[in-house]
Image 1 (cartoon, rainbow, N blue to C red):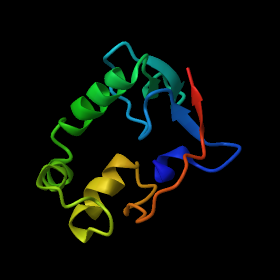
Image 2 (tube, helix red, strand yellow):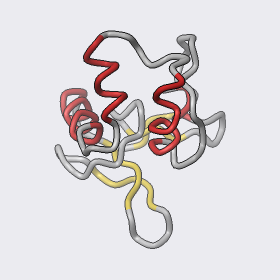
Image 3 (tube, rainbow, N blue to C red):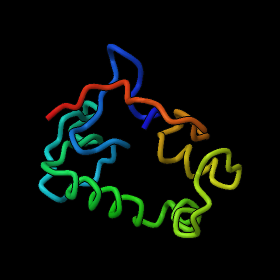
Image 4 (tube, rainbow, N blue to C red):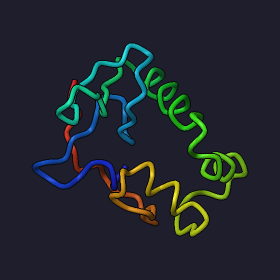
Length: 110
């Protein structure tokens, strides 16, 4: 969540979408696109809708190691075996997960 929220005042977080997935489902409403009409950020009506969208997004097939680690309960912090999947997820923005909890920097948009 810290990596996806950005830093004030420019941080953007979709409502009920703490890791900013772009899954078009679950009653999601597009709130940002990349300029050519391709939506890459959604807000979802409820927490349950956001959780479902995250699950669908991660099950696309691009994140097999991340899913395996989550299912095994190993966590994602400081795991070099997932760096390429994290980099893919972030669009090249980062390749690690911070090892501390923190409050989101972004303001939810709906």
